[in-house]
Amino acid sequence: MTGLNTQSYTIQFNEPLALKSGAQLGSYSLEVQTYGKLNTLKTNAVLVCHALNASHHVAGKDPTTNQTGWWDNMIGPGKPLDTDHFFVIGVNNLGSCFGSTGPMSIDPSTNKPYGSSFPLVTVEDWVDSQARVADHFGIQKFAAVMGGSLGGMQALSWGIQYPQRVAHCLIIASAANLSAQNIAFNEIARNAIMSDPDFYEGNYYAHEVTPRRGLRVARMIGHITYLSNDDMAEKFGRELKRIKGAPQDYQFSFDTEFEVESYLRYQGEKFADYFDANTYLLITRALDYFDPAKTMGGDLSKALAVIQSKSLVVSFTTDWRFAPERSREIVKALLDNKRSVTYAEIDAPHGHDAFLLDDARYHAIIRAYFSRMQEELT
Image (cartoon, rainbow, N blue to C red; front, side):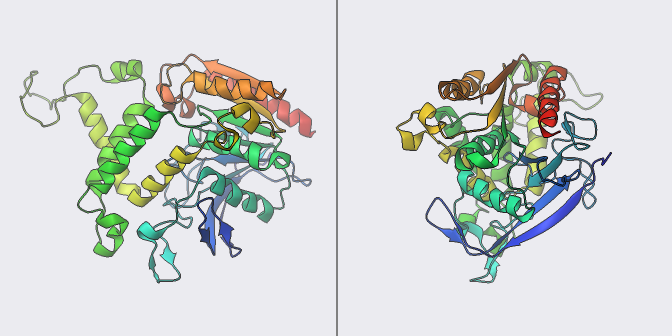
């Protein structure tokens, strides 16, 4: 039994990385954490791709921050993705603010933080950089690439960009592109940040400030979209926020009146404490740009024709940001190409956040899928 067996790496790459925008990064580093043990044949590796505000730290307690990994309920000894059998890799994507090269990093050409000059990155660029991480570990083919939301987009893109290097794609609570409504939510959030007086056109590091007000609003907007109406009603309803002994009636002010307001403000404040505004702009734009069918005249079936992997696609009934019909579009395109695909639609009340939460049915599906995968490796 290998247990979690966490290892942390800072991997430096000096070969230039050509980006989809036409720009390139001459050198860069990626923060990586691994869990479990790579087998002798290097066939049991699983890449776990993160979404907007997560990182390479996917499971266990981080020894430096004492924070629990963002998918700790999914990954570890005896868990659905069992690190007693699989070697799990988490990569912090380019442009992030958790150690990999991004806007906060020093630009070697100026000896100052990149700030707004950091190039726009795409899902495809992240996948290309992750392929170099695989090369670093000598992994020719992943047993699986797995992710939820934006992470699911990366898993899908792996199947397209490197069809011979991935055996299974697990695409959870995701879509083959963003709807106009989703792009609109991202634009409002970005505008909140860019309108903050402390933004300074993205070069706020030099002024030793952060656009906290904009970040707070951006997070509040985003957080609303991650929850379902039923979930918010159950958690908060129309309950008033009151200190003990205060009258249980409206205060007729713009202070925090309702529990849901207090929750959103708390989430916004917490987010502004640890996340970088430029990173938020970059990652939401990468979400907007992802559209593998675009080069095929909008025909997703043609775009996915190159995929060779087996796939598991999972959606949640109350996820209105990445609704089940968007997952079914991926399933149909795979079936059009006679690819092996398993689809599960989970009736869960938690909205988009359901992919991060404990749901016995959802976890049982993931566990069963990896158990079958484990049999393929033996």
